[in-house]
Every structure is written in structure tokens, then in C-alpha cells.
Image 1 (cartoon, one colour):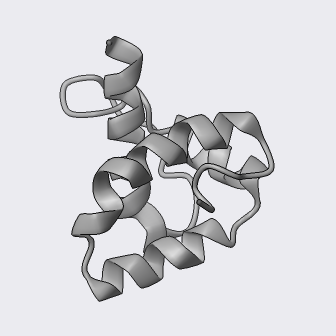
Image 2 (cartoon, helix red, strand yellow):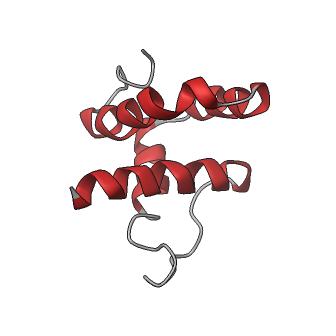
Length: 87
């Protein structure tokens, strides 16, 4: 529910679908990391995720944005959001 009820609609649309698809398959450590990520400010999260969209393999690279502890999780969320944009 916290993934769909964020402070800004943009994060609802990014985190909600990702959580619906991925959260059930996360191990305890990944769930703890996601829980910590949910405690971050929405405007920061939006910048961290969207800076990664369009920067996957063969698409160029962006300067990493956000705390390094979240890097893998943010990359996964951005990749998921990007696939939804391509649909």
C-alpha cells in the first residue's frame, strides 16, 4: 500500500506497479532495503529513479544519483518503469 500511496502521483505510478510485481519475491534483506527506500522523500526518489531511465546497457550512462546503498534497487525500479514507458 505504501508504494501506491506516496506523496506525489508520479511516485505512485513508478513504485506501485514495481511493488505489485516484485515485492513478493524479495528476500528479507531486500525487503528491509525497500522499506528504507520508502522512508525517503518523494521528490528525491523521483530524481534518483528518473535519472536512471534510458541509461541501461547500450543507451549511455548517467552519473549515479542517490545513496549508493540503493543503487541496485533504484536501477531495478527504473528499468521496470522504462519497460512500462515502452509499452
